[in-house]
Image (cartoon, rainbow, N blue to C red):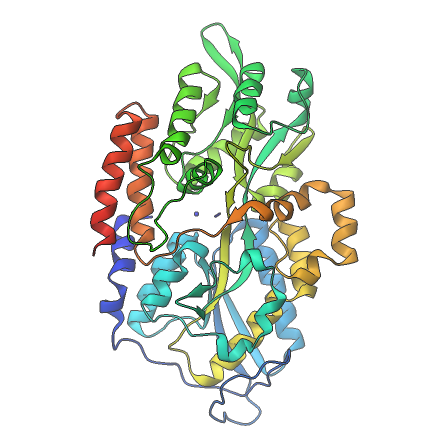
Length: 442
């Protein structure tokens, strides 16, 4: 989940009105043949001999972004009738804002990454192409637990690409030094006890904290699920957090903060994530919550025995899925859409998802990949890579009603007030509920 400006959020909410009648499709440049047993809608005939050019906007930087560029280069080398032009657009939030602006201006990409919780907003605004006629059943190859955020109103609008769940990352050397199980805590109470044992003070200052997590909506969702609760009611019309389960995460976090065994990293959104990860690498924190997509980078930079584990359970285990899916833009031409589907299939197919998973730490997205000998050998060599896949048994899709991008900002603001001591848990949850209900009734 791996990355919002309020103005952008307002844009998401009002995008249907803004985009109505806006945008124009780009001129088709060529033809393409469908593969994978799918049957796509028939398009127009392009100029003979000219490859179809499509724009692909992605939202992963660093080594993961470099690997995506390599994948695109490999695709282009093996598909002479299609040329994909990749462009990095910043974080998920930055990419979302740019995509919406480009659709309104009529110069949108053909394929892009969309964070899973935003699929409903984009689909409801009619920005995305219905992939059902293209997939023609091919979506069955993807892991069922990753498809929860691919559908909106029973139509397929997205396919899994760089998918993740939050994990508990462990400094096993610190755990062993404290006489603790190096496999990590299994419950909230054990997480508290482990954090107490690992926290070290130097005079009046804390030199090492046992645990740290960004106060982020993704992790809040996880702890609500673990407490037997949900974020929205089943009909998606009301917030469902003004309950024991909705308050439990804040009571747990604020209790550990007051005890001095947990650090809430400073900064907002992904800045706080970066601080938590750096504290972990610097061995100033023994355990953190972060995405499985950070596994490769943390593993390569850690100067200690790094491990991963399920998020600890309260009443039960639980985690939201996260990361991003690939989507096709509705305003593209028929030829571009056919080429886009060919590209999307290739990027997420077993032969590509296995090395991408091993390179990045994101989960492989096809069932065949998980069951392949290559992944089994990789899991045997590095068990940390399998933890996220195993945790899918307890995972749930993120809420994805059109207004959830703004709604999650409201929730995050209020839970952060509670963590900072600016409001009680009851006050924060009540305020989030009141503000949230107004958004859901829009």
